Length: 67
Image 1 (cartoon, rainbow, N blue to C red):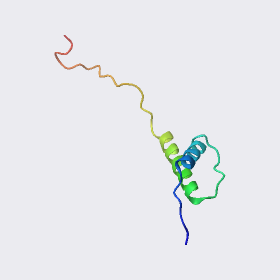
Image 2: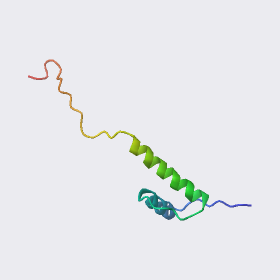
Image 3: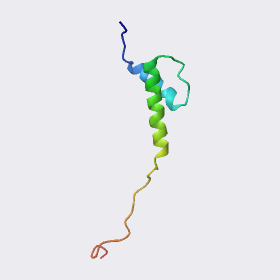
Image 4: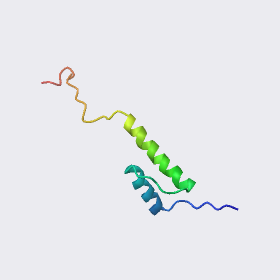
């Protein structure tokens, strides 16, 4: 019988730091690798999305609002 232990918050944090810093994981644990790969994929997806910065201004004021 194989017992699967969930990742502790401490270990998840260490894996997260390794992923965002683009470090290798150094572990063969499938659960840790899956979490690491999930974070790396989310980061890659965020890089592909266009960044929307600032506030969009509407210079076309409705009639009567410019007085």
